[in-house]
Length: 477
Picture 1: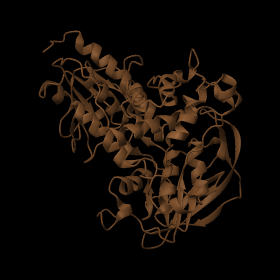
Picture 2: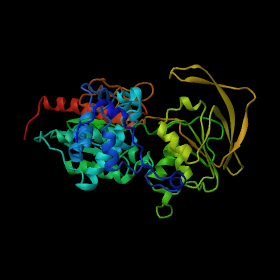
Picture 3: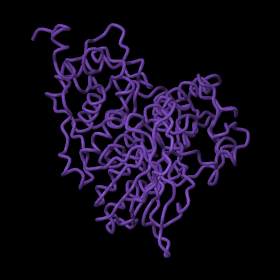
Picture 4: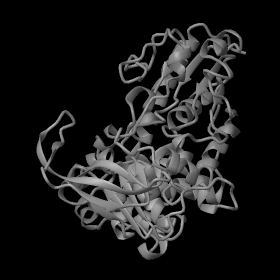
């Protein structure tokens, strides 16, 4: 078959993602997107122009060689494509599902200048799923053991990325996780219908097969301090990737009523503790069947919470957001899916007070309509209250999804690590080094709440710096 010309490639439309029907999926926790078939994947891969200097790679925080893996997909060599991706990304099936490619690699795609960009994320997912379901996730080559030990604190995307890179470089790696399961935000924060937990487990199992050791129920700062890891346990370097799991509230009157959740608690109960299968699993969550739910916020976490409440049986599941839809930071796909599933969006509206009964149960929220003024520091237009526009909305459950901060445990127990005024660790940008010798950090504990792939990029960058630090005086065994 003759190779397609550039013009012929440009004429191929972007292939749609097969997905569950909206009125079916909003009642179950099965994955919404069903994945490309081989036929769809090959056709989508043919759209890639194979640019001599691919700008898409510049938009990938972990530097995946995108045009190379897509060329292999077009040729039908899916296992080679998987190997090519894994040269830079240890969690391809996760990233293919939850990364905001439309803002990163796909935003730089030349094909998108005059049409729609190549569906890089969907192809990455296809390749990773193909390998897992046909041969199982194959192991990368491990370099000669160095005799050096590294402790990774936190098993979220930053920690897993760092661990995967370091173990392949020959170091002995142990990941310490505070919860009883591995994956960090990937398992407690992102719902099953967006990221099935079996996918996370498969990629974690692959890291374990490479030699990464995982220790759960280990709250570093309590079970051991960082100093104890280095002096007593003998770790030569430490990477801190504990994320930003401390929920923010709005400090409104009535926020302590029963029925008001932080997004962290609500999603952790449902995702990690399997509250959606209660009483099969013994962690309950507020029974929203036939009731009114309001989620406050406009990011991906807010979308996850409101779509989850719909699946739990809420009669009305609403997003309350103080700006307009244009300013919402959530992924376009997540907003689109939410609308299809029957989520109501109440824009330019701000909560003033939660209302409850004498028994302490939430029954409403006082709201005020807003209009947009001049841009603020974030670049988004500032919401301004409209006087006299207050009204009451009856609700039975509220979820606060306005962001998260840093847990202070590390800060309290390791005073020689520098933090900024927001409680984030300060690092050298090029190396992710902290102020403490041998200690590095990355992900949300450094940047504040961000994306999975940015955290992975930080973990990968830190792994390179840690390897250089360790090998200055390494003894090869």
